[in-house]
Length: 494
Ligand SMILES: Nc1ncnc2c1ncn2[C@@H]1O[C@H](COP(=O)(O)OP(=O)(O)O)[C@@H](O)[C@H]1O
Ligand SMILES: O=P(O)(O)OC[C@H](O)CO
Image (cartoon, rainbow, N blue to C red; front, top):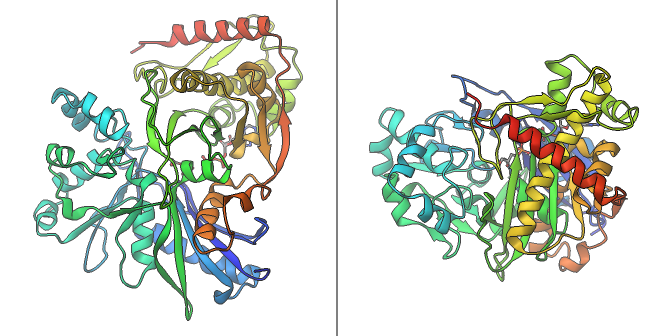
């Protein structure tokens, strides 16, 4: 196995990447390409699905060439993807009927309102584990069928196919045009019954979506098809949405294990075992990576403005030139000086769900300077993550013994230490931050026997550093109170 590799295709919101892993779980090559973001109207976000496919194919070729790895040295491919983003295409020509509607797109708020008026809120939560929101694929599909000329008739004649990005890539990678997705991606459509593991007929009827559009749903770790790499047929043996792939890549495979990804936003997921946990604190219930024996559940919460707070300091306030400067700035002051930033720029998500809240910087005194503001921005990322962690621990009725972390902003030691302090939980940063790609690689590698079993994965990505809580509980409570007060000041503004 020493000269064999697993190729992970990581198709994210802003770029397509290809990452090669060896049997020791080490990365031997990466290639990355950004693609266009389209904003046809305020609050609308689209991607060109053809550009995504072309970019993904290009990075796949590039990583092999750069690493001098031959096609036949690729044992298997794993795919991981931005979730919920919706593509509909023609089953014969493979042409998308419209740009992909991206998970961030808010165009279907009205359709969501209608679903609520139809009294479907509770049913949707119980069946799909989700809250009604434009974030998920269902209303995006309905929008495309309603607004693209001829789409409804073509869908009813069985001529169209729907897929999230994993499914779209799989279709294009396989000669036989395999139309399939995995449990984790299906769970994000708001059409999938996560308990009985089937598409939900009542929801398809409520949204007028023909079942012929939908892909077959398989375990995340399974044989999906074969990709033609040069003369070689390579098995595509794992697929999962990126946040669940990161959960798996972080080896959170037992109940109570959790990871938080600190990117533009933050995504916190906790494995809750084979019994679903319904949230009473505004979190969602979703499926974690599955295999033929087990389909585990996870609780999930997301923070809209994570690393984006730091981009705001850079791009809107002009306070910094580079995100990495914030660490020294935050460390240069003794405390936050009473300042709290609540980055409710687009409202507040879980556990508050207040779309009308607006951002605020509160508690300023004459002594506050740019360092206090940078510190308040970093602390805000941790407070928001803590709110989710707190909700999760209450929902799951368990106390976390460790939070595993990944994503671009975990480079910031101040943020990591503050997270450990404010959440009174050890925070573990792995040596390899590419946990999403690793998750997809692990799924594919396990399926084809590249790694014999999950135990063999245990030492592949050891911790690089652990941040232990050091703050005393009085200070922790005082700071949390300050944050809660600041949040209260931001609610319900129009
Ligand atoms: N040293 C740092 N300190 C704080 N934030 C950082 C640092 N480095 C990167 N970031 C933030 O992390 C985000 C990028 O992380 P990444 O995982 O690449 O995000 P995404 O996958 O969402 O594009 C940016 O929002 C950036 O502001
Ligand atoms: O592509 P990312 O890393 O921004 O992740 C996006 C999420 O999957 C959306 O649910």
